[in-house]
Length: 410
Image 1 (cartoon, one colour):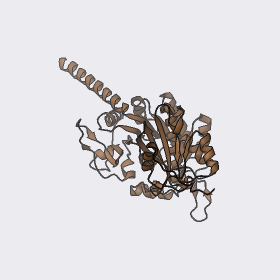
Image 2 (cartoon, helix red, strand yellow):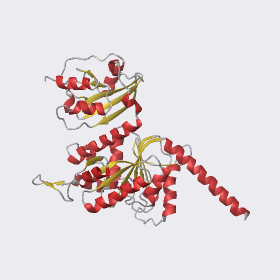
Image 3 (tube, helix red, strand yellow):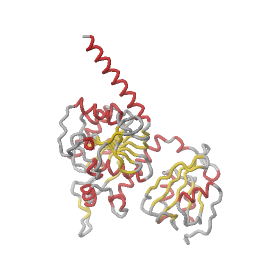
């Protein structure tokens, strides 16, 4: 009897210690996104993997945690070959590195035979998910993306109860059979008080490779109408893209590097939406007004530089990416690369404002664009030399940036 009491006390002490470790670990993860779906086969894991990689490519520190314990697919989508390993000062297990600033954890990296079936009941699954947080040596993260199995079972419930500030990103396809299950996912999130980041409609049409005609294989506008009825954000729609299938089977994310693909363009817009929503909720400095030379009263400043081929683009409206360089009291804190929306008159100034830019450093720019930027409170520096973005930022901060002629003739 005495031993039973002591065992129970030890078990409670271990649970309390794990709860403390989970709390401490989650405190070092700024934003948590649970990617879920009402049913399988809608491309949820593909969306989770592409989202994590896209965020990491923009300079964020990202974790990707696969809590689909029965059907883990993240390691295969990413082409991960390694297994988890012990290490770190605490002696905890280290997640698998995918990129220098992206880490991955999945039950598959613990398995000797990747094709073995995982046959577990609910309590054990919940315990494993908690171990994925407490017993893994995650670094400090800007984003933790969590890939959940479809439905509203033990895994998403454990995440909702353990990661109380997680936001749900719900993936669907346009047809009613998927949307009916999505509505259950929405009800689940509301019952457990989980904030819903928005919906993503995947497999939204196919462009015929022969005639170019759009084919609505799974109907149209299902995600849009559901978002309207449920008063949720539709973060975007993703077309069917054969290269995504081929990349997933090959274990590569190369599709994200092909900016000509409609899928990639649509996905970048979704990531922009997610950044904007989370920034609006977590960055109170977003409303801080700027003073002279684009400097905020808190000493922060975000410089936007159009880039092509690693250097300043001659005209900001036709660049490959924008470098957003965050500075504090004259020092560079971080640099994030973002793909701009399709170039249309008047679009870029508003987009730069939404991204939090205080200063635009450009080679050339039309008069109308300059006017619109200044209306948004963004300082404009024209005629900058064709240096790399951070070099230009250092010159600007040191007041040594020698602006030349406007390279845009319009």
